[in-house]
Image (tube, helix red, strand yellow):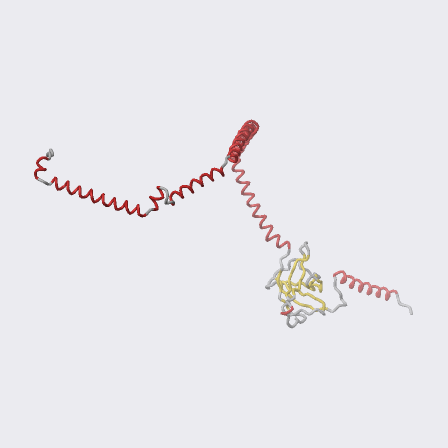
Length: 300
């Protein structure tokens, strides 16, 4: 059975188109032989997300972004449809996160599953998932590092303006002259200190050595002195005084310890006091006599 040339060309064209279709989808990462389920998400911003962008679960690619549709008259403006493997069930609480895919700023979808204890019935194909946007590296740089860099540039501009004012007013030149004068004074002072170290310091150290020698001699004399014998002699003298005070044989001991002698001295003193009182009484009586008063001289 013979086929015409036109039939052969048509069949070849169909085969080429099929191969092209499968090859194109293979290059895009689409497995047309694997059944998929489609889920929908709504985003405020696309952040570089395009069709055929990867869909991940915990870093593992499970599908592709099927389409990104936008309508700027609505809020949110972007509607994203993702297709993932049909065998993967997304439990209730799963969130569709827009994340950065690489350093070039491309977007990808990360399906964030809830904790195992919080998983409920799975979503059905075509359901709308809750979404949020995760800032990427460039976003963090823009909000953090670039803002700090802008603040540093502002401070640098302020500093340059102050320096320009100082230069124009001549204060910077005067400051540099003062710095130069202080540096020269420090040089002179350093030279003087060096001379003092070389000339005066040996003399001072010699005097210190002489003083230390004298102190060593004094310490040696103190060590050589019979301090222990002196302390023993002083102890003997103190014991002798204590013995004399407490002994009844000596004069001092009798005066301190004999009660009879003490009572006799008290009695004698009382008798003497009484005698003196009687003498005073007699003298006063005699002076009171009339003939005595006539013979007494009158005070002028």
